[in-house]
Image (cartoon, rainbow, N blue to C red; front, side):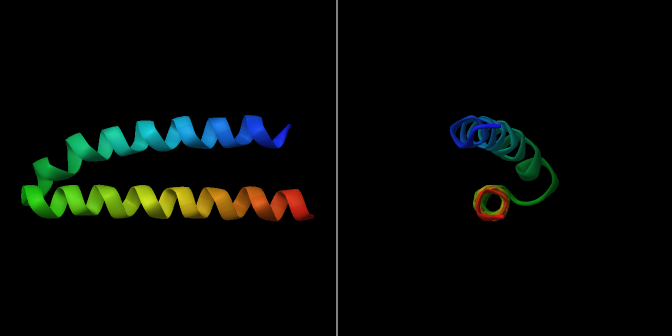
Length: 59
């Protein structure tokens, strides 16, 4: 699969995950911590996905 297709898939899925986290986390914890947690998990998701794509591209 081409690299740009994987980038688009990761980007769209990250936005979907971020949206779900924005709605779900503030319901189970205080709102401020829920939003910060959603943002942190979004960044972690993008970082892990990006590193995975880079490793597959190099190998």
